[in-house]
Image 1 (cartoon, helix red, strand yellow):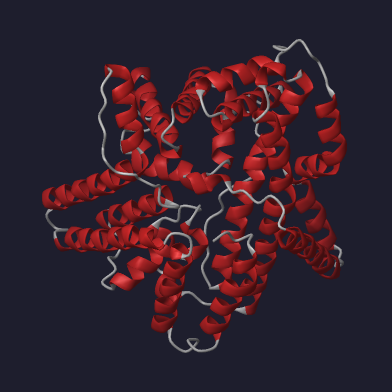
Image 2 (cartoon, helix red, strand yellow):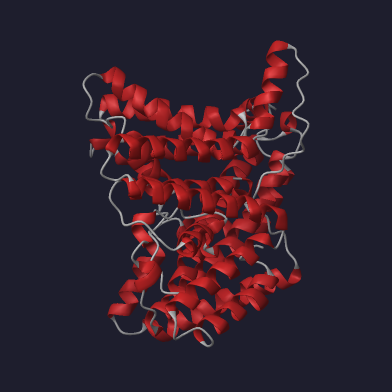
Length: 468
């Protein structure tokens, strides 16, 4: 069930809010149980069988948490239990996400015909809820209070706002909020406006950019003009940002509606002047997860010798690529960022305040090239597309590029403006002058009206991170 679907907007969400604040408003325990049941229904809506995979993950990780807490005074035993919990979660992720890919590559490399005999389908959001489950046990091991109530662990892992595509909520962030959050009208109204902003990003900008990107990437790449190839790459650059950040905004907004405060997941990444800065601003919850649970335990950047630093960066960025999917394009994408970050770490170029325009162009260039690789089905397709961007077809501009630019220039301009803090600064300045309330209300009502109109008309409504 997509947040940007009629079923969610007009049936599921209104019913959940009504029941939460009416029938169960006097009992936090009943509210939590209700939210857990609602979250399981939300997850089971498309493919009910996969809800048992998540329930299994909840039960097993709840048990591991209890065991880690029980042996807290015995570091050796608690560490062994922690290791078993990590192995369990990684095996679960491997079976559903990487087993078929691994067998296919073994067959290809060694000329075998191995057959796992299973038609494995990827459960929605398994990368996200598995990382949250791992976070729970690791944080208990590090000293956080264990949850004795399995329903609370279930709510943490399965809570529907962040279940499908994050942000990845760490247990230590919401452990206290599960039983002690405080809902109020201000938080609820902030949540509504944040949800509408995310809905507008997703439906009005990301979906429009998707049409342009899909038309270019699905064309005969050898015949793409330079202009059309660049237009498609830029469209996908905007699509993935507004698709994912819009979903994160909706998730954060929904959390606020029920009294939860989630961490931010994006901070205008396309204004970055280095790759290092870009990854501090893009998918922050994933970056910090790998930083705190992989990079720092390996020693981070405070290790002796550049070899160990490079090793730590390699591990993190190889795993980042693997996390995104079972395809060589994702792994090469992750390793590309590894090389760029090694370059920046060694040269310290990201710390220099000089040549900011050139540093911005360098950063956005490699980000766009990275998204071409990310979007392509194969490394060969990515290579051919990049060749087309630099004149492979010998055609500089064609009617396709002119048509899509003419039809969508308003959306491209909106995407550029909304990728910067400019709109936020204007609203803040207006607020200081005391004129923002009425204008903001009109603005958000207009965004909601337009978004709902697009949804009701049944316009193209893909969601990229459903694949992860």
